[in-house]
Image (cartoon, rainbow, N blue to C red):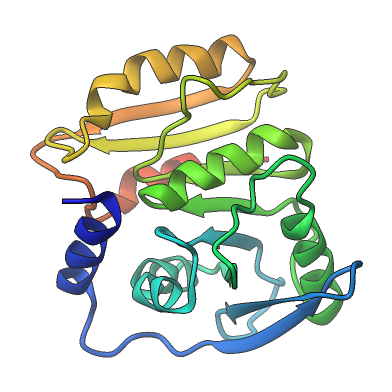
Length: 223
């Protein structure tokens, strides 16, 4: 079974009966093209919410973005604004020279009232891997990375990561054996200057529910 098919199957199981609704927004890029995204945020109460960019798994299309709203809702419930950009042609946001995510962040700050801190990158499965790759291209632009799960490919060149925080979780029974590379991947990231909190989730497979007590403790340490 391919990663995409297994991921879709597990997401269908995890989907709640009523998914969180989100506002659609089209962001115009410098080259004249547009990127469609979903944006949702907590009720306006006090300080503006910090921004998290959620990279959908699979091909980052509309279905995959909606299928992962359950995780976005958990962030919104904890005070975060979430943006889920979609790639119309399935192209990776982490491709060399691709500035779409940075432009999206700028447009969101211009059109919404958000905390002025750097954004968080979040993803699961291939979305987690994509979030890690995006951060590796421009580590100074992000507050941290949450990949549950995610991986950095062995042929990916890592520049100085400048103490960028990573929160990585991989299931003990991961269907694609990502658990076997977690230790070596953690070492690579640390050698490149990242601050890594990584762990195996006992009895979990490829997609799993978040341990929010652990994640909130990590989020609370971000600058």
